[in-house]
Amino acid sequence: MKIELENVKPQEIEKKSFEIITQELGDTPLIPGTEMIVKRCIHTSADFDYAENLCFSEGAVEKAREAIRNGVSIVTDTQMAKAGINKKTLAKYGGQVYCFMSDEDVAQTAKANGTTRATACIDKAAAMGENFIFAIGNAPTALVRLYELIQEGKIHPALIIGVPVGFVNVVQSKELIMKTDVPYIVAKGRKGGSNIAACICNALMYLDGRE
Image (tube, rainbow, N blue to C red; front, side, top):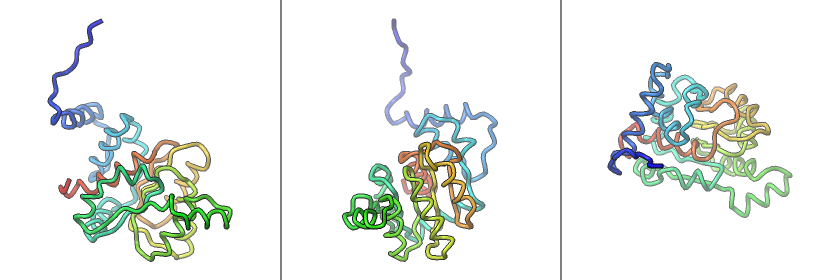
């Protein structure tokens, strides 16, 4: 059986993909200012559910962009997300990307406290005293710890990207973040992942045209 392929030049593939996404979204309502973030999540995952399950706190995109322009750094809960975030672009603004999951002190703290490494990572980040963007794509326990520290007044994130994927405490942890007064971008439900966390970070940077 012969398969007909579109004749698309390599440099035009992404442009063509976004044209298809826009066409298939049709008149699906998107919050003004969030369109390219939603479309990039769909582009990354080929999952149009993100048009409906991505939730944005009021002003989250502009607050995040301002933080990025002011040199904010990003903390993520997986090396995969760290690898996917455009560190060169973030560095143009003065920020960098951290992932503490492989740090020996994090492993020791988690073992001593009987917690997950993700929880210990959040504690390590909080101790640094910076108002990070937290991009969580894997561990709901990271979101739970962020919620606890926010309630205790010990941490004030510039933004929380809450998109862990899975089945255990995933939905609940996302709902906790949406109860805070911290700017957030959350994927309701079970869907998400490290690729989506990185995608959202990049989308926020690319809105300023420094791709």
